Length: 405
Image (cartoon, rainbow, N blue to C red; front, side, top):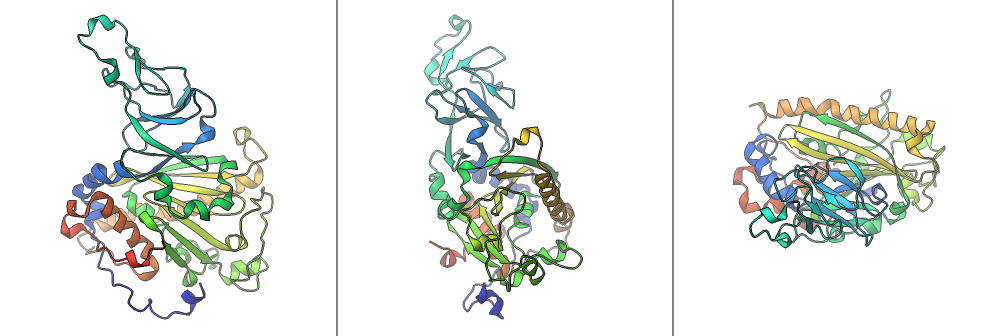
């Protein structure tokens, strides 16, 4: 951060970015490439272990399009199956969540084992000529867990979740993720491409322009540091502005104090730099988390079509109350405040989608401070397969020498 404040130009030898092609946000062709290659190969957040704590507990997950279900098995393993009966294609379960000893389709009662997905029962089986039940099991998905967060991946050949996350689990271990609980969840549909929503959280170049309060910004983007991590993941640490750090009793932006949260349960293991800066991580492709010592949100972006995105933000924290019985006043105030910040970001997104489709928009120039965005787009191309993308829609692979390994 000292370096970032002191520099007058980007580092010597840092590459010049060409414009990001507008067609990546607007064309049917690029949308189709993402649907065919990107999302089926990506690790995405599906839920939490405590969402299905007991044997037979399940929830459905449809955010990627293909209906899926996650279930707690008799062996206490959590597994993911496609929620598609292998008879006529009806959903195996229709409730968003529940408990079942057997996965029984409500259409014709074809039934499947909760551990293996094996087809175990077919009414009037005598009427099927040569039916081989062993070939009609529920197809499985990769399902892996990090600190009680459940991720799924449709690609059987994908790297493991921990390999995908790289250094993030070690760096975020101090958050005590497995001990946290869900505070509250919000959701909003925005009329823009999912990448426009993701990019808004990959830089703080915009912060003082749309998130100021009475002319004062909480962050000083001049000192923001961008860590480029493997597999499109990233980190961003931004110092507080003088207005903000003085309010905390800090003498300067790097006078890191053990700022304990008022009215919230403290995650005591969180280090003082995190307490005295804005610290955020990006988990490719669609998860952003600005972390804090009292709890934090996971923000996810789910494509509906090329011009529509569902944004969800779910807060996790150490809790001494049951959020199902209502939020405490401090948490209600925190959620209201964070919702207002999100709304400031939403204010830009739909107009950007309309404007970016204008013939006046020749391309998207990206600066050094926005390099997490370029890093994000590079990995999109790698997952799609660079040779699958028309040359006019690609981004150059430039940032590998700057990735932390």
